[in-house]
Length: 198
View 1: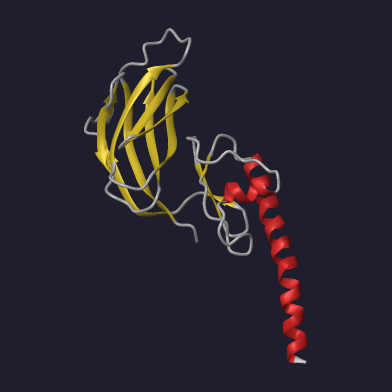
View 2: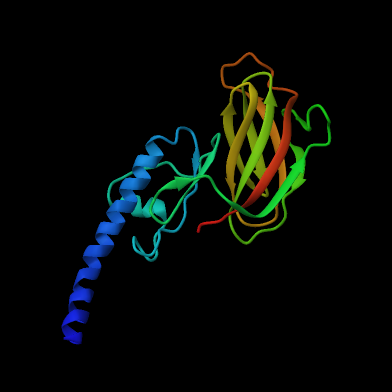
C-alpha cells in the first residue's frame, strides 16, 4: 500500500508542478497588465514553478512576455503565487539632499547624491523628484547607468541597481525634441534596499 501511494505521488508531481506553474504565470500576467509603468523586479521563479530559472525565463518558456527591471513610478515584486506587491526593503538606506528647498540640485552633468553602501544582491532604489519641466533623469552606480523620462511635478522613480558598491550620481537632460533646458531640477531624497522575496 505504501509503495502504491508513493508511486502515485511521484507520478502526480509533474502535473501538480505544471498546474502551479501555469497558475503562477496567469497571476503574474494579470497583475502586470494593470501595473502601469511600475518597475517589475525579476526574481528566481519559486520552486513549484521551476528550480533554476528566473521569472522572465519561466514566462518565455510559455510564450508570455512581461517587461522586467525597467525604471518606473512604482516598484512591484512577484510573490510565491505570482501576485505582484510593493517591495519590502531589507538593508534599507535613506538619505535626504542637503538643500532645504531642493535636496540635491541636478543639472546636465553627474551630481554625487549619496553612498547607499555595498550589497551582495541587486537593490531597488527610489528617487524623489521635484521637476519644473519634463526631463530624462539619469542615475549611475559604478559603471551602470539608467535613464527614464519623467514629467514635471512631485515624482517618484524606482530603479533596479546591481550588487556592489553604492555611490549614486544623477543628472538630467531635456527630452528629445524638447526646447526645455532640463537644467537645475531637484532630487529630494533617495531610499534603497534589497527587496525581500518572501
